[in-house]
Length: 139
Image 1 (tube, rainbow, N blue to C red):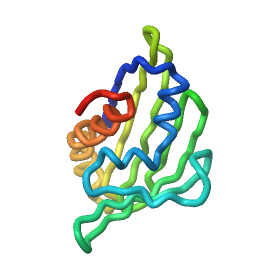
Image 2 (image 1 turned 45 degrees about the horizontal axis):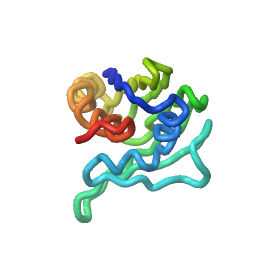
Image 3 (image 1 turned 90 degrees about the vertical axis):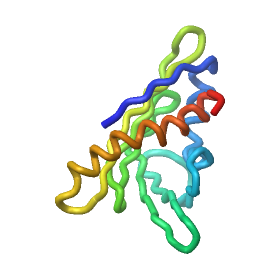
């Protein structure tokens, strides 16, 4: 599991709006796009994120487990890549702070412990970029 925190001059409601635009998160992840499901993020909303290089692709399916605007969302990864991610927004120093907690692993029997360690090392770099974009930190 890894935890990322970012501070933003944005008020909590505005930062929440950016975090709630889940399909837009992939704009900060190379080779990745969101194949949204019907509707918009809310409890039970399912969506797919695709990472592709030429004809090769990997689909990562997810379902929103908790949706509590303007404070918290939690997503469960339900495909080959398993785990969860949670974002919590708090007022902070005239703006806001977001805490992003995530755990991910490859859903292959016997590999969870190894792939969780890989996710714990790669995740902060990958999702830190996403979080920086959401809060407006220059890349």
